Length: 72
Image (cartoon, rainbow, N blue to C red; front, top):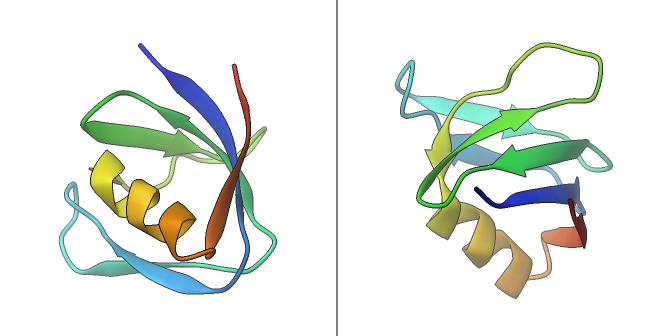
């Protein structure tokens, strides 16, 4: 299972497949992405974030809105 440390470079909203609707991620947020297709996201030492597809994270990275800092 792939794990990546990710930094959000600008405030975005992502779809929440667990709860429905959108969830905002603020600029500067760092999180850990766990999984291949639909990822679990956690903030270090805080609560779990919504689940959203890995393709969303890939798109954010391609647009410069997120950056993968390292693979864990």
